[in-house]
Each structure stands twice: as structure tokens, then as C-alpha cells.
Image (cartoon, rainbow, N blue to C red; front, side, top):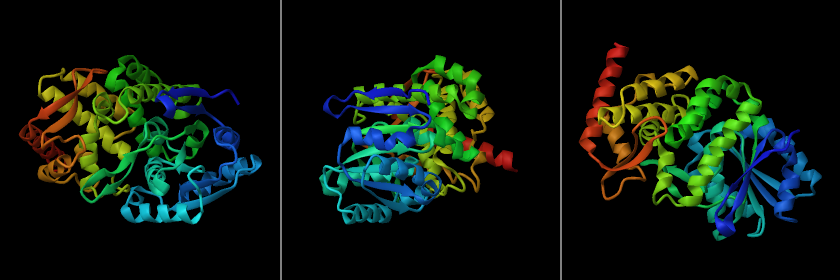
Length: 377
């Protein structure tokens, strides 16, 4: 195996590294032992990941002489709930892990958010390691310390900033993802080009098939994404400014997830983000901020990569404009009732727009839903 790419996240005394490359799962015991000698582990995972990869992780930990126990929850967004959070917290306490021990979040974004939040809460804060097993988690949710669960009022509304001590992104485990889940993660990769790195977006337009196929292009795409996020997180850890850019497409995307009841059979997070990023660019064009060609180019690339780009592609419908606006008004970026959106002046030229007129957003959504109705007629 080649040496992994290591991306540092510079946060002073809480700095950590993201290791990216194939075969890291088999090295997890060695790397965790070096990080925390003699620590015991409580692994939080879901049933799907456990069936595919837990044996490899357990063998690595056993070889390193690390004592470990596992808490397994149901797969899917529905596990980011108060009930499952309580189950995981009680499970961690039952394992008798102490504050000097480690929680391991072993799974996709749902597990990373859930286990990270439990680690932040149990014993008033425990160290944890992220071992992300989905593309979305490797490039986005495992990095930066955002943890949390969903409320019936919206996504990720209950949680904490709690940085991991180490991230191990084994690119080889991505080969076991379904095509749908991999494509959903690819939306977050494309996001980094759209935020502030037009050359990366152009590179993806040329190399996306190699990223899908695996090998060096996939590792490079993940590493570039992680470097981008690590830099933003180091400058704005708790999202008081620049970090909000990472939510490009997420305000619309989270609203779509809410109106579909977080039902992954209808819409998974990355698909919502894909549609949301196109909507953000279309809304920017409607406001005269960017050319009409910009959203067309974004939509063309995401559609070529196999992602949904239009509201009418949400199975079962995307609700009404009022339902979507109710979800948007619960967004964490709302300040004193004023809407904050991530808008753009072009590819790689995103910016934070405060005090966006809610009526303009409502009108835009009504127009998009009407267009979707015409297409479905």
C-alpha cells in the first residue's frame, strides 16, 4: 500500500490529522494505539457497516492489543433522533469507557454526527475518532467537529461542536457503496469547487469518471476536498463567518429533506445538496448575481455524474413553497428572522448573503414548483 495523504486540521491544542488512502482500516489499531496508548474503545456503527467492515476493524484492534466493544444502530437518517442518541449514550456508559478512552464513529455521516454528539455529551466530553465509510462523510461530515441529531423541526438542530482526535479515511471501503450513495457523496466533492476553487471544478468536469472508478483520482479528489474544508474550519471553527460557505446548497437541500420526512428511499442528503446547489445558482442568476450560463453548467455536470438537479426529480414531490419555506426558516443560519443564503457570482465565487428577502425566495420556489408541475403533467 502507498503512503496515505495526510491533511492537518490546525486548531491549536485540538489540532488533528486526516489520513486518506486505501488500506487504512487494517492499520487503524496501530494508528489509534499511537494516538492513545492503552485506551479502551467503544465503537458506534450501523448494521450495514458492521456486516461489511467490522471484522477488518476488529482484527486490526485485536492485533494492536486494544480492548473494544461495539454499539450497533439501525442504518439511515432516522437514527439521527433523540431516541437513538439516548440509546447510544446509555450504551457508551454501559461499556464503562472512561474520559481517557475513545469513542470510534465507524460509518457514514449519520454515524459520525450521532456518535460524535454522544462523545461530546457522555462524561461531559470524550475523545473520539472518525472512521468514515461513505464518500460524503470522508470529504465533509467527518471533518470539522460538527455533530448532532435532527429535530422534528429540521435537520441538525440539536448538537455540539466537538472535534475528533483523528480521522481515518480508507478510500478502499468506498468500493462497497452503492452507486447511489457514492454519487450522493460526489455532490459534496463538487461543492468545494463551486465554493471557491474553479480550477478544481474544471478538473472534476474532466476527471469525474476516474473519481467514480477509484484509484489516484479518487484519493486526490478526497484530499483536495479535505484540504479545502480543513482550511475553512481552521479559520472559522464555530461558523461565525466564512465556514457558512460550506453550506452552499444546504439551505434548499435541508428543506427538501425535511418535506420528504428524511426518508432516504426518496432522497438522501447528497441528492438534496445536488438539487440545492443548482437552486442556489439559479436563485443567484435570478437576482442578477451571475450569468444564466452558470447554473446551466453546474446542473450539466451534476446530471452527467448521475445526480438529480431539479425539484421534479424528488420522488413523491417536493411539497409546497410554504412547506419548504417553513423548513428554511428553521435553518441554523437564520438570524433574528432574516434569511442567510450562500449565493454565487460564478463558478468558485460563492459568498454569504445576509438579509435575503423571504418573499423573493418564496416566489422563486413557487416558480420552480410550478415548472415541476408542468414537467410532470
